[in-house]
Length: 284
Image 1 (spheres, rainbow, N blue to C red):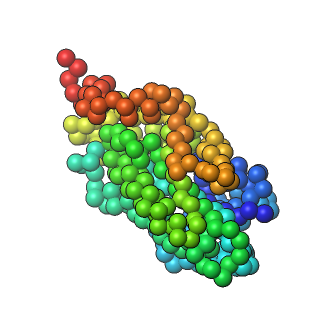
Image 2: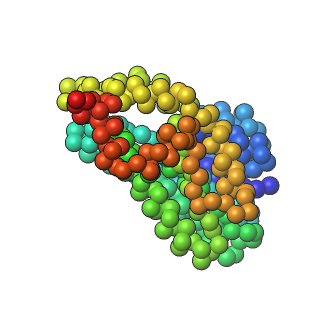
Image 3: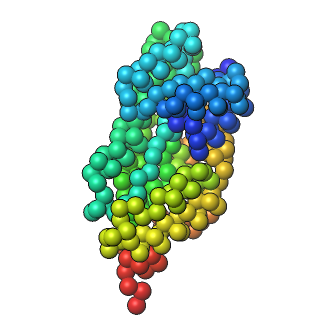
């Protein structure tokens, strides 16, 4: 049975990944921050799911989880690590509290760095273990290549993850460990309900209130029309099992308008289009 560690499986994309991999015959070691969330998924997926409880910013807890997995593997290598856990904290960058920005980077970029260091020995760096080297799949985003307004901290974290992944892939050639990026677009998730409930938060009294509301309305509408989380899980399965996987998979609904064209057009043109559409520029 192939084995994989997936971080952040309590909801959304992580849960979809865990479902697809477990139902495809993997033993999934899935991490959550709360034991109750892990146990709920354990009841659904049965023997193909093994809960891990840790926060991706907690080095000691991550190390303990890696020890649990090592013991369970009993001398075999881990086939895969999926760095999925992440958060999105929105707000105009010139007003966003520094602690919010730091937390975004800590979870979305430092987290995968810490988790990868802890599990890399099991993936192939430890020569005493048996089996073929494993693969690392880092869940980025459209935001890893295209930075929309009001999610600058998130985009910074995902742009950073893209660069980190590329360097890591080249370094880990020494051990035969591959690194693959998956960049989802909109995915159906409860996160959109939470975002709507949060509203403009502390930014309602700033000059950005109107544009931010228009952007939020568009973003929420697109999110609710997004792919089901299991669609991302299917691409993760491909990344972990294909004989010659791509280095990056873009999984974007309406890819022509939401991915291809915005990356081909001149950036100043895209700036003006966004600015006029949400009120950051006068339309006249």
